[in-house]
Length: 443
Image (cartoon, rainbow, N blue to C red):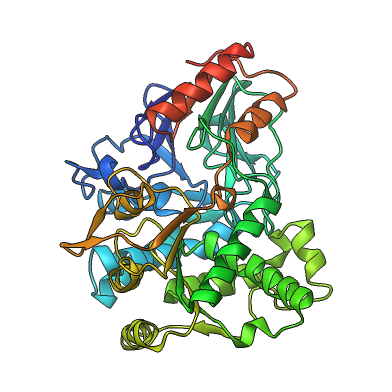
């Protein structure tokens, strides 16, 4: 077997890896959109590789940089199975419906037709069990700890085994099961998003978030958190609930009565409902919380913002009311969506805080703000950046360098070869040097 990369080999986004089983038969692992600088000069409506002989598509999780080109693949004539875990099967139509509505068409009939076709192709497969595919190939999913339903996948043929990591989660995430290392691999295709850095531990990240929230209340300001609808939003709600209760116990005050928490994303609200309905896939810690809090993703003063008119009214209300508030909205890299209106209203306000809890691709507005540039362009207009800007890397859903090395070292038999993907050059280089120094063969 051999791997051909159609995305996320030289950059971070656009994950798409074709595993050649024979000269004429192959499997596709993910089919994602390019974002930020990775997207420049690309026509993503065109599938630039032949789909003849493609026996199946395997999805590691439902972030758009891993699934966003799937509609175009199907439009190009792909009619085979789409393999994924049961939670991914449940989340997939929600994510793609939203992406199509925002980026392709608002024609409800066309979107419904695509979703019906997608439903016909999807093949949910449970974790931890080998599944036989056509031609003597087998595959198996294991939890990746990145978002609900995320998986790394083992593919085996004639005793040759390839492992694709997808996106691995960081250790001690509050909601998801941590990834465990595979037994072995002839080739390990490993993500490297944070291959050059270490995340803050969970206690530190919670303490920093708590300090930012205290500043928000003291300033009667607004804390804006750009967050991906899937994964980060649910994790933030879980930990905000814990932080509020801890601070209230410590200071003997009713903190929730003084600050509004807004989730301004219809998609986030729908995905949170799916998270809540699939608690059997939560971590042991999260299930323990359920013994004393039956709604850890919902709490007093949590305001759900649905319609666009309501969204615009909330932005204006926060701008004029001077009531402290926390806003969680998408998109996670500030490339569009409702977060942009909040940024336009508050990025120039010194009393506001902008908190990044996830990766920001080069060329995105989020990256410009995160790098504390003097100004940022939003909807074609220039806005000076005067708000306080924070990055809480400990909330990243991606494994850091130590997590990635631990994943490799945990294998019973060392991988014969490792290929790094899904990382900017400095991150890939740093991780490759570490792994090579440990005696691994990075190709």
